[in-house]
Length: 258
Image 1: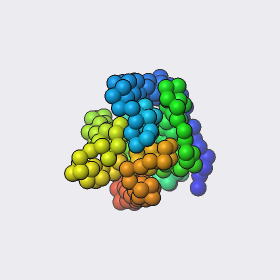
Image 2 (image 1 turned 90 degrees about the vertical axis):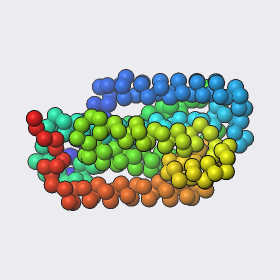
Image 3 (image 1 turned 120 degrees about the horizontal axis):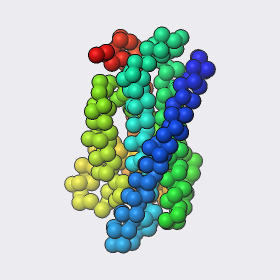
């Protein structure tokens, strides 16, 4: 294992994030604060509590998970796509690197940045509501598993995308709607019976439910099922990346020159 190469890719991606700190950190945090103010004020004034938890506090895990998924995917997808776009990815292909080392560098940096933003949002939310974290170890576990899993998904999207439109297609048209329909701002128990059944086919529900359980001890689905769901998704993403690098020619990992 070439750990020097992994560290070089990791540090380059992290430094790129800090060079654009407004876009990388301030923007998602500000957006989440606006979500919190709007939903916490407008809806919180009408709904005092959900499952015994004050509504303002109840939506915090959902807001963190929303940002975590978006940032994990966008950081990883752009991180691998941009070298393809400018043609510098040939340097990785010609260097003595395995695909494992490339994935570790890019995915590790993307997951680190998204976790950092999630923790900043968690700290910011304490300025608005009181949060009692019942299971901090499980909270960290869900953060790590989710950020790594969706950073891997972002890496796959970055390899697949042939233009910037494709790069944004899945996060905007698939992930964001699934988060909003996955109980980020409400409990599934508040829905009619048939919609409760339909919602349970949404995979994001299991992530948000398990993450919320680590805060308040309440969940829409058993926490073991949530943990199993994110673990299965992690394994599927790892398998897909292995399949891509094992079967696809390296020439397909770069964009055609014009």
